[in-house]
Image (tube, rainbow, N blue to C red):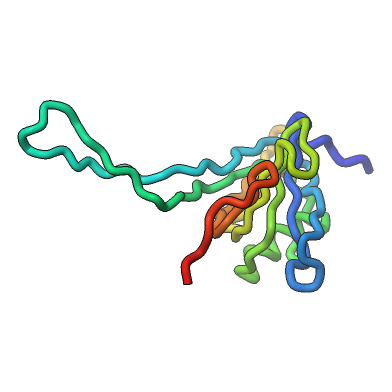
Length: 156
């Protein structure tokens, strides 16, 4: 069986064995949609009472947003299943590496590498289409690599 080309040329891969084979990424099969994680900073309004325009202080801390993806769910595929796949990462509460590459992606170009945990895996069995799908949410955590540049540190 030929697996679908994921998300119009964008590819999401994950470490299936982060302890035994770190930094070895396997493309996740049958991705139909990806919402890549956003990165933001918190802003706090610090306007003095006598000011006539708002003033904000922006935090030095970067905040990770969740990443979600939709897949054509293949219960026995190694990147989806409970033995080594996304379901396994959820069951084991294991931090995995994830690599997102855009349609022009390559090592360090149009590439985002994050560490994170699978928050949920929601399978769906649509009656009309006959195609099983699932939605997966990943929570990034810690420093990340954006187009080859390492962003963020974790304090001692």
